[in-house]
Image 1: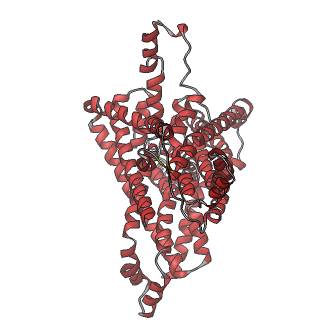
Image 2: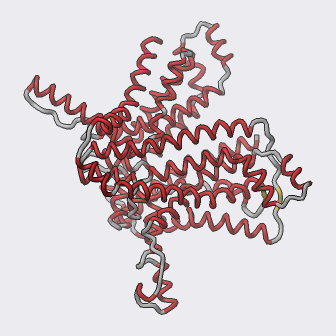
Image 3: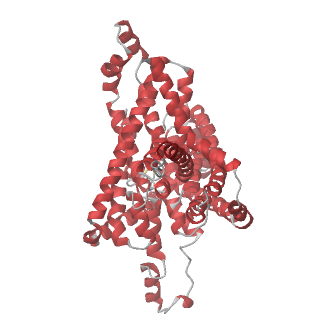
Length: 539
């Protein structure tokens, strides 16, 4: 059983890697005039926009996250305890939803410019200057508000783990607070900051919904437009390969920073917080409050208002049907990922084969790949399989069965399993690492089989991890947009694509309820993770 199970794991891992392999083969093996035209005309502008967008989001996110993390981790000020988790909530709000709301506010017909015209008596746009929200600057601002929590969480943890000995020595040398921060605290936190910046850069490059709505042409939108408008999988694969190479560089950087971070923070004691007094505590409170208002509370209140006002027009039978189908696919994908991860992690623990450990790491690769890139790889793979099946049925029965894989819900489900398998893998691995090997040895001495050992020993200890993995994967499936847009069958919508399509058509009355549902569901894992972090801190 162990032998067959081990090879079954290898087959699963190979299947998970096939979409990326097919993408690379398609990109390097075939040439067409479509990509040549893209290369000669607009590819440079796609790359330039992607670079500008990424740098802008990284810089602005750092200006938001690093000061907030420093204040929350090292100082007492009004509501500091609440800001430690309130400033993480923007992750629950999809970036394309936030993009729509900010455009709705700052566009020419929005409340901000309308108020400006009313106050100053201006009649039209020629009477005054106002920045264009539908620009790369607007996209940078919104994505920074949406993504800064990645850096905030890592930096806050790193600042909290720093010892006060270096800072106290600097105080004896009469160094100013700013100098102590720049010369001591920030360099010690640099590995965590690099890791957070890498995550933000990867998310910025992978974003599709927000940049599409801001009309910013990046590599991600180029992949989608090339497939949708030109119908060229080969050209889309070539652009996707360029994006994949850039993403891999950031992944390598993040891994290197993570290793250094573990070394830098090892054996260090958490520092005592200092109490701010006078006007400083109000300035810090105001900074955190404004950041929370702009990044989450105001957009969330606006979304709740829209959902309440347009509830009757949004709560339609079609919305209910799409929600149920989305929940069903999310449940199927979550269960599939959990079963596969259980097989991989349990066999890795019992068999103790190096190849199984390597296979587990390889199966996590799909999560690092942008959804739009993975979707193109899945489409190439399943299309080839469909053609093969049709050739076989045509030869045997003189009939074609059609696109039974690439043109069905199977394509979306398969892509989601490949993409989110890493979540359940990492969740189960971290839980199993906390179970002492002596328990396994005791069960082995009692002559328990691996199956009985798992059912009687490991499974009861992993119930929380199972629930956590199910919730996290479920929410990720509900939120995923680029892969669902490319792989959805004809006349089929996921909740994310349903919301995006209506918001793209500026029909907020139809999209508001779905957007609010996605946001509320996304709050669940964030609040749960915050509770776990607080429990660890208290211990």
